[in-house]
Structures are given as C-alpha cells and as structure tokens.
Image 1 (cartoon, rainbow, N blue to C red):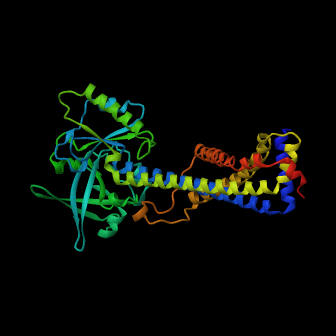
Image 2 (cartoon, rainbow, N blue to C red; image 1 turned 180 degrees about the vertical axis):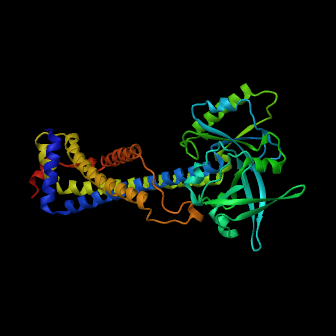
Length: 421
C-alpha cells in the first residue's frame, strides 16, 4: 500500500475517534461539498430541461428553419414562393434534415356573440407531421387533411378555446379581411396546450387548401418548414453547427435553383424566437454564476477544514519531517485526506441531486406558472456526461484550492514541535 494513502487513512481514523474540532470541521466540509455539488447538478438539470422543452415547443410551432420570401415574415407573406421548389428533394437528402413541409398562413378574426379574438391559421397538407400537436393534445383529436376535398376541421389552443367559449365539436366562424371580407366555418375537432403563451393563444391548424383559396394562391405557399433530425442546435448555445447547416442549404439553393424558382431566403428559429433565445442565454448565465459560487464556497470551506486539521496535527507533521519526509510528501498526506473528504461530500451530493431529479422528472411536484416560465412544472434533463463533467471539474478545482493551506507545512519546525506537549 502507498505510504501516503496509509498515513492519510490512519490520521483520518484517529480524528474520527478523538472527537476534536477537526472532526466537526470535517463534517462541515463534507456537508458543504455535498450541498454545492447538489445545487450545481440540479441547476444544470433545470437549465437543460428549460432549453429542451422550450426548444421542442418553439420548433413544433415554427420548425428549425423556414424558407420564405426574402425580407418577409412567413406569417405575413405578401409574395408567396413556388410550392414545387426544384431543389426541395436535395434539401431532404441532407443527413441532418428530417422533413421539409410546405405551409401557408392566413390571419383572421374569431367572433362570437360575446368575444372576439385575433387568429393565425397555419395551413398544412396530409404529409405534415402532427406529432407535436398530438403530444400536447388536451381534448379531441388532430384534424385529418388527406381527403379529396379541403378538410373543414381545425384545431386551436386550449386558451383560445376557453376565451371564445368553444367546445370540441362546435362550429368555428372565422372572418378574413382583405379586399373583401371572407367568412369560413370550421369544425373544432381538438384543442392543444403547448404553454407557449406568445404563440398558442392565437394559433390554429387547418387544411392548406383552404388557406390557399383564401389567399388566391395557385401553386404558391407562404414557405417551407425544415425540421432537423435532432434539436441539439435549436435554441442552443452552439451556433456554429446551426450556421454550418444553413450554409449547406444555401449552397443547394444557389446550385440547384432554376429560372422558375422564385427568390428564397432562410430564417432560423433563433431569429423568429429571439426573446426566448435571450431568456435561455440569461438562464445559462445564472447557472454559470451558481456553479462558480458553489465551487468557491465548497473550496474555502475545505481550505478552512484542512487548516484546522493541520493545526491539530502539528506534532504529527513535525514527527514525519523528523523521520525524513519532505514538505511535499507531508503535503500529499493531507491533500489525500482532503480529497477523501471531497469525494465523500460529492457522493452524498450526487445521490441527493440525482434522486431529486428523478422524482421531479417523474412526479412534477414543483409547479410553475406557464405564463411566466412556459412550462407547468420544473423541467429536468441531465445526462451522464454532464454529471461526470461537473464532478471532475469540481473535484479538480476544490483540490487545487487545498494546495494553499499546505504552504503552512513548510513553516513547521520539527525541533520546536517535538518539544511541544
């Protein structure tokens, strides 16, 4: 057995039996490290949970990127683009692209005897992936758009349905104002609740053929929604990968477009939901501050605990130096003892943090206001790699801080300590 490890273990066992101040400081150090690690892991898990859920909701409404007329927002398109882009299949062949869907938008008004509300209808065809609306379905079902005739079914948000006092199965009358007022009656077949207040309170999904008739478009659409196979770059911190993907799609547009293709530009989800993106960046900053503060607190508690341990072991240090051990060798003994304390605290901190994350992910026992946080409970998302990274970083930094009190060892004179009683 290594001599340093053996002596560190012996000194630790003696301290446990003596009941001196060093034992109390050891407990305080363990608790401090445990609390710090626990708080850091929970903070990262919550931040990741917010990012994942908000990104999932935002991309469910608006896709990862959209192709639309340059200088125009896809919802307010005045100059539509071709519904049969010649390079659409080339984009779909990219390794990171899952689907490319045509969409058309139309803004209107919902009106009953007592209520009135604005409305944005997104028109989609039978190929559109409606899993997002199925996952957030509150009542009813998702409309079917595969018939020979344009479907009259519509799905709206639960908030809008409650405000307008609609129930599933009701007829919904929508007014569209342009050169002339047009009226359409839809059948409400379902309601959803994505808890993204700024969007789902006025959002509806209907058949694209209805929207194109209202817009008087022939073989034209507002744009195309492009969904990635993963959402790791959506609303995320790494924008380089997103920019790389945008560049690849731009290259296809320039290389394979024909004279019949109208001019098309790319808009990312970052730009369409910049408020949510800034909010997530602020959340990242908070996590970084928490991580820094917790490591500093744990580190200095460990420093004070190790100093107390050194003060109570002055005679032992003098004896070891008298027996021929160098300052570095003696310091290693106490650094190992400090490392044992850190590891014990990290084990407790990890256990409590992971237990909390598991229970919150399963039972959602901490509620939140969807109006302010876009979710109804604290979201949790954490991976093994992140947990390991936190532990390795925390252990390295705290252990590095423990080098400071070891400077005290070089000031201890064996001759003086050996005479001390």
